[in-house]
Image (tube, rainbow, N blue to C red; front, top):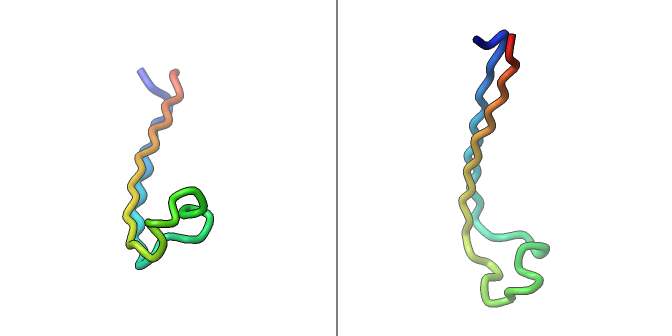
Length: 45
């Protein structure tokens, strides 16, 4: 059994990648991006 449990979800989009993301891949400069993440936290009883 769990005393507590939680779930977080994030979804972000942008019109262009930031410079730090294209530093090693300059051909991607100005490209749009999309990212998603799920976080699960469980505390057993």
